[in-house]
Length: 356
Image (cartoon, rainbow, N blue to C red; front, side):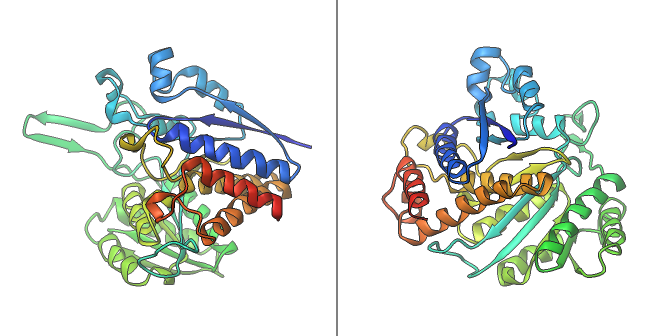
């Protein structure tokens, strides 16, 4: 039996609470599935600054290199000391160091929650290493220049290699879903960069003749998501557009606080909820851990595609199905109109494992 090594980075703000709730559920699910798991606690964020004067210390990165994947709590980098604000934030540093090129963000209606768009089940594949995000698109430097106090220049980088691999990831996902991919771009204005993205995705599409494709400009796509989110299956787009669209999609199907995501390369993946660290409610045991829990379920589903181990898939399904059933039964945190605390919600999911 393979023992899967999973790093656990608790993060800042509400991070320690939602990660603790998530690992409680994860341990129970792996026990139910009779799967061997090694959870490795690693420092990041404020805890790491206090101990190592670095929000993402080398000791953490080196340990993550030995892990199959990891769970990353939210970080409060806006509050870090000035010397650390000049660096990549913890999640950006990990995406860069490990070349986590695919940011995969589903938007799926959860039974028992209010959705603006009714039933929807889509997933956004966001290219994660370049585009207009200046902290990720350069080998050395940050990709921005202040020419004069009144003039700033920010670069956007697009490469065929990066576009091809995110396109393949999106089309491979579509083959397991409803076999439809929507390419989102702005090739009518950003003719070279966004044009390369569109044309490269179309080239990749030729290798997946069973998959239906269409494409929309980013501005039109936001309107289409609001009007008919249920019509979309897999969406593939560049970094900044994907960041914006996935936040919109998450809010449309319930709340950004419920939105999961993973960041992956060919061998490892990082579970990271789409929301922030919410320092205003930290320590109150009221934060909603659903985004973190579903991100962890995604991580184990992704690991199953790499290792072909049915126990990994079983753990993912246990977490997601039990979470959905718990919410459907009316057990929710306060943001969803319920009365449960963070820890009580996690305990309710664990209890549901016992009756399955």
